[in-house]
Image 1 (cartoon, rainbow, N blue to C red):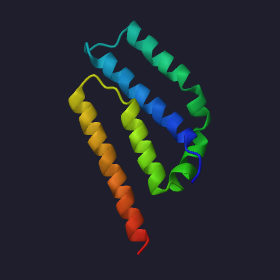
Image 2 (image 1 turned 45 degrees about the horizontal axis):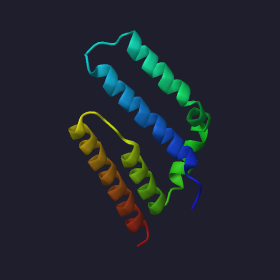
Image 3 (image 1 turned 135 degrees about the vertical axis):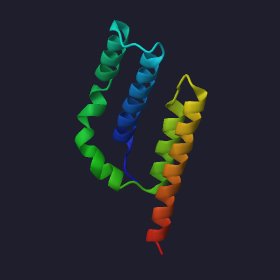
Length: 109
């Protein structure tokens, strides 16, 4: 099992960006405060973006335990204001995890 910390950094950035977009869309306008939120989000992502080139090989090498760990990690840090949207995202993560496990099971015939 490889170290998936880089993937967690990228996942954290994507979730933070999603939450920032959600906050920016609350009033239906994009203003100065929204720009500040995005800049803070991108600045905080510097460590994650440094590892972007390493992501593709890491994703290809994931095993089912690592995928499950990443899905749970995403669920744990996801904090959307609209519970229905968060629930849909979590279901989508579970479906993706299920597809990954199905693919792995078919591969191991």
